[in-house]
Length: 23
Image (cartoon, rainbow, N blue to C red; front, side):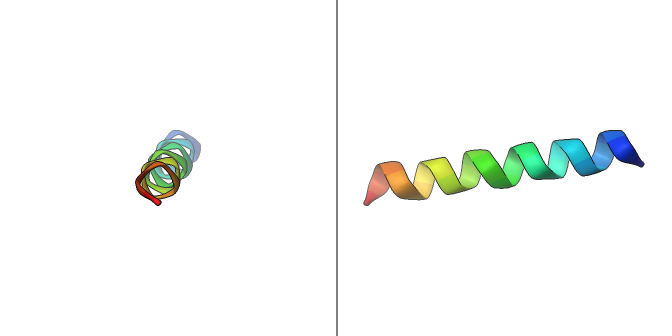
């Protein structure tokens, strides 16, 4: 479960970085 949470956090972080990069 912890691994899944970490993967979700990393994915959200990458998604946020992509949005910021596109701004």
